[in-house]
Image: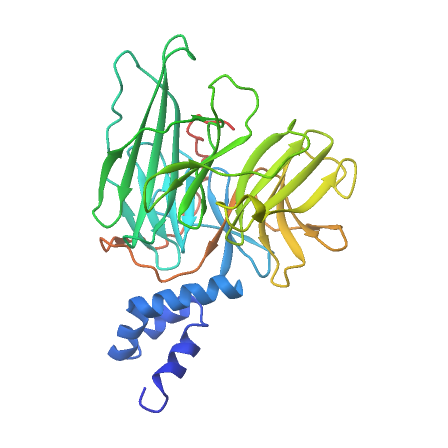
Length: 382
C-alpha cells in the first residue's frame, strides 16, 4: 500500500464487485481493515447505486433466481438460508444489498447475497385482541433508519371479527437489527388495500396503498411510515382529472411512483421527487391500449437504463421489457431460465454487514439423481 496514496487505492477498490473485494481482503491486514471499514462500505455502496453498477434482479416464483442487470441474459438459481422443499420463499424487501426473506411467521431472515452472511429474526407472538381469532392481513416492510443507523423490519397485522367489517383492530411491531429484538408501536390508522403488498421503501419511509374504510372498492390513498420517527402520514398526490383507476405504488431510482391503471384503457405512471411536496409529481409516461404493448393487465417499472432513456418493466409478472421514454417503443427481453410467472426486485451488491455478525450460508450443489420438488407457495395468492 505505501506505493500508492490511500485515496487512490480507495477510489480503485470502490469500483470493484463484492466478490473481488472479498478475495482482496486476503492481500494484507491493512487491505482487510480498509475493505471491512464502515467508511469504505458506505462509499462502495453509494458508488454502485449512483453508477448503476453491480445491480441484479432477484426473481421469485417458488425458488429465487438472480439475473445480472447489465446483461439480462440468464437466470441463476440462488442458494439461500431459508431454502426449503416444502415452502416457497418470499422476498419482503431489499435495501442496501440486504434482502429480507420470509418462509412463515417463525422463519424470517435478513441476508446479504454478496457476502452470504445472514441473520435469522427471533420469533414474536401475534397478540390477538379480545374477540378476535384470526388475521386478515399480515404485511411486512424492510428498510434503513438513518437516524439510529439501523435496519428495521416492520410487521403490520390487521384483524377482523366474524362480521368482517364491523369489528377491526391492528398490531404493528418493529424489529431492530441493532438490538436483535421486536417491540410494539402504535397501531396503523388505515385499512390495507392489498393482501400481499409489502412495504415499498423510498428513502427512509415504507409505503402502502390504503383506504379509510375497509369495504372501499377504490384505493386512492397512500400511507407512509417513517422508519426514523416511526410516525404515519398520508402522501400528497397529483390533482387527478379522473380518479376511476386501480392504484399501486413502487420505487424507481430512489423516487416514489404511482401506477394509475385504467383497466383495458391505459396506464399512467407518475413519479414524485419529494413525497412531502405535492408539486414534485410529474407524469413519467402513459401507455394506451391497444398500443406499443398489444395487450396487458398491468406493468411495473423496475429501473432506468444507465442512459436514463429507457425503463425496465415487468409486464403481467410474465415478461421483462424495455420501454423507450423518448421514442415510446417497447423491446422484449429474453432471459434463459426465467420462470413463466414471477415477481422481481432490484438488488445492489454490497459489503453491508449484519449488526449481530450473522452466519455464513455457503453454496451447496444439488444432489445428482434427485428430482427437485416444487415448493408450496405458503397458500398465498395475489
